[in-house]
Amino acid sequence: MTASDARALATRLATLDPDALAAVFDARRIAPNTSWTDFFDAADALLDPAQLSRALADVSDLEAAALRDAVDADAAVTPGLRAGLVSRALADEEGRPYAAVAAALGGASPVESPLIFEGGPESDAASAERAFDAVASLADILHVATRTPLGRIGSGALGAGDRRRLVEAGAAATSDAADTLVAIAAESGLLAGSERNWSVTESGTAWLGIRTVERWIEVARRLRDRLPAALRDASGGWRDPSQWPGAYPFDPAWPDRVRRLAAMLTQWAVLTPAGTTPQWAAGLAAGKDADVAALRSLLPHEVDKVYLQNDLTAIAPGPLEPQLDQRLRTTARRESRAQAATYRFTADTIGAAFAGGETSASLTAFLTELSLTGVPQPLAYEIERAAARHGTLRVGVDRLGYTRVSGDRDLLDAINVDQALRPLGLVTDGDDLVTRTSADTTFWMLSDARYPVLAVDADGDPRAPGRHEVTESAAPEPTTSDRYRPLIETLRASLSDDADAAWLERELDQAVRTRATIEITVRMPDGSSRDVTLEAAGLGGGRLRGRDRAADVERTLPLSSIVSVRPV
Image (cartoon, rainbow, N blue to C red; front, side, top):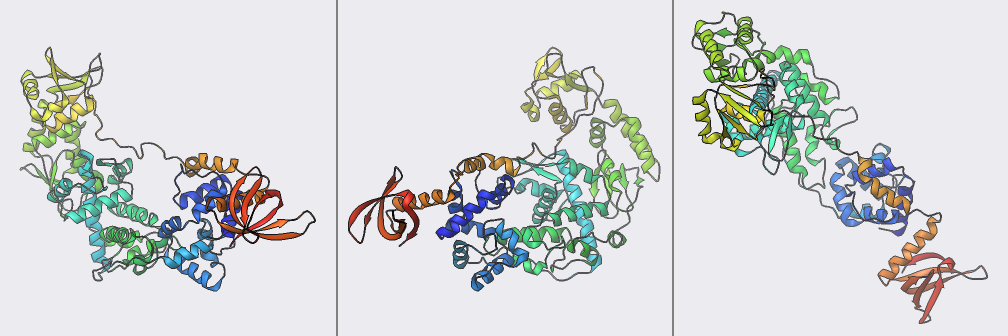
């Protein structure tokens, strides 16, 4: 780092408005609580070799090449890449790389580019089939997560137990596919991660209610729009995927990250296993939309009717429309996921539908409308039997604020000794059971344990409690300007009217700290100038002390007489 570079950068930073200054700090990943006291501190830190080494991780291959070319030619970076480098304090206002940046770049070793596409080419029809399977699998995963949030380990990945559960349920073909699909859902905002769980978001719930093609389009667009900057092009699409492995040549984490990105886009059929784009998805690569008509023509036709069988099954003669599939899953367990899917009704699944708010009349009306064959007598009988049993237990909040479970005495006795329900902390209170656990949690634990439970409000009327409700975000993140406001206020408070004098004093202070030998130019009383070489020893009271090397004497010089300072 040269003194002139640091001074030029400090001067530039001081002229930026707070939002632009916060953007520079954010781009360079500066901690908001850093202890800088003035803009000279900021410039020194931004041009520090260790900080620049970290900053190079965010430099793309194109930017790195442009920086090298500019250094070799002693010129400015090409206009197309200049703004991004200037905004990260890697080049001056004219686009010339700082000397410290050139040194850091010269000493940096590129990471090894990984192999991210190992498959062969495939037809558009085969890609469309993979797209259909991916949409169906992700929908299955969201349905599972709607009922019970998925486990999340410390690294953010899906828990091993839930990977097995998703594979065994047929929602994913392999554990790796389950991981990738959950990553897709998280990246596209359909799942939200907390410390221990992955839960369905409001966007995820809405996504389950739209048709297959629209499901695929929405996720594909979100995945594209969240690609790292180095993979995007000026059109809003993406660069040739063959260039992706080396897109961030100095980022040690990039090989693993680009492998995950390639796996997600391949799993979602945005890319083929060979890294090419299906013809019907070419618009996405160009910053536009996919060819919806072409994709729809290659997908199986969705149906809106099923055959209800005497053996308490429903058979869909093709992929069932998502809205119908979503509601049918609330009252039946899907046993197979082929183009002709099978759903099975049981006392437990029908009871769960009643727990979720269905009634005998609403469920019968839905199945009558859905069925090509009417509602068979065995199924109608099972619905009547479940309706008669439903509500044998009632869960609500009493006047003291406790959750109260009332109803059939034999069932209450069974609940009281059920080891699976011990976390509720139920205790006997007269003829009922009470707990401090919320009414909704108590209701769903009893429902999951297959008890015929009904949620009621304060007036005793039935209500349908929500389950695992998720908001899009717990709280809005503070803006970049807000995060850096205290630091920027400190820096701006340090500004003085005489920047030259402030910089000169800083240079002298650093020389004293390191006991450096410096050459200074002093203005004499007669107006002439004289160069003096000193070993800096002290600074205070507006004066510099140091040993004059030539005369071997101690000198004390007023700062007002010092014109410039140069290292020896």
